[in-house]
Amino acid sequence: MKRGRMTLRVVGGALLATMMTGPRSDVAARAGIDPEVLAARETAWRAYFAGDVKTLGDLLPPEFIGLGMTDGPFTGRARTLDDARAFQQKGGRLVRLAFSETQAQQFGDVVVLYGRYEAVIQADGVERTVRGRLTEMFVRRDGKWLHPGWHLDLSAAPGPTP
Image (cartoon, rainbow, N blue to C red; front, side):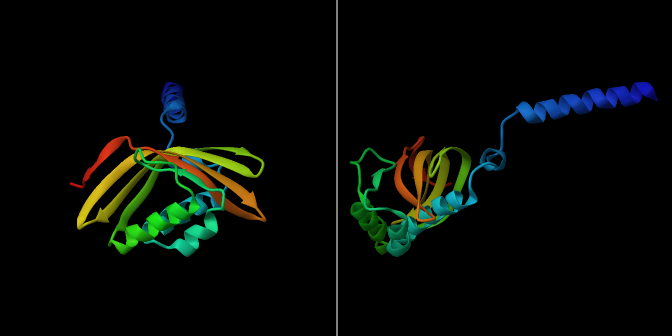
């Protein structure tokens, strides 16, 4: 009986140690991140792909700087809003959005998010999956999180969704 309990404790301890040192889920990685920052990020991405320039414009301050997924130029707030509007006007839409990994650094009223994203978008009648890494900045001003910059890259060239 004692031997059975000892074996159970050893196996249980090993399992617990494995779980604690293994890969962290996104939920675990986000545990300490202000949920309002994550909500602002989600809102910004969805507003961009929906062409909702009112909502996106409320999140992007005048000094916004963005580096998009492709090797294009830096973009400011006006260009980013124009691009969002154009995507929607051409019939583009967001099919699915996921952030598989997110980590954060907070410095007072500034939060920097690092992570991975996957978006399935439909444009020109074709669904494409884009995956990549992100670095996004958020600043709290007057009690609200603003999104003054992002840097996105592609980890794989966009291709048709299977």
